[in-house]
Image 1 (cartoon, helix red, strand yellow):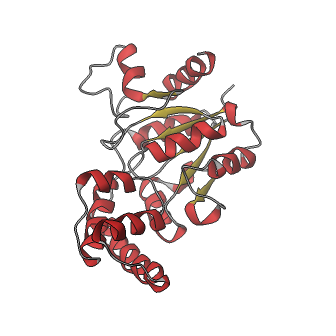
Image 2: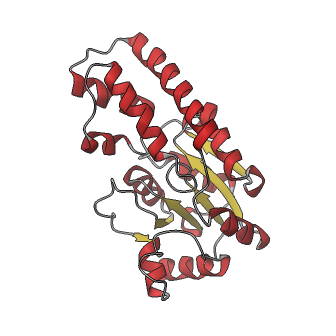
Length: 236
């Protein structure tokens, strides 16, 4: 039985990864050397510290303790600017959330993004759809560790195997699987191969007869589809 759905935010419900990309490339340039697209992909879905350390290593920059605080402030301010002007929900997401809410399915936001930025993303989608949210600075360890999803399952008063996760990044998919949740992946370009146990949204939709050019997104997906997919995944 499907007890709850946990939604990643960046790249899953909102098309924010290109905006994070702008701010991340600017961060790398401040440290002395622009990231390659391959290295940028390694930052998707990760923590700020992970991103900063990848940028610093690439630039040959010797990080000081003060850099973590200063660069975080600059990057988060820049992301907030970009979100304010350009952030939009992914096509079909709001309609699907409305349908799921009408079925009284509990839903939670689970994102590595810290609270200072996460709230603006949640508001762009509609905070009224969610029972609660768990963000990156509210768990002992961020994704790819399972802490966030274990906490969400605890809040939902459910076993992780009764919970479905929508995720786009390898970091998030790994965390959800490690927690024992069922995972529908909406993989970003940075995910070359899905871990065993995750099923792609595209594969599920194509099996239902959806044209391949539309199967990777949420447009036309209903609550009934999601509930049926959960049952299929849980019996595999």
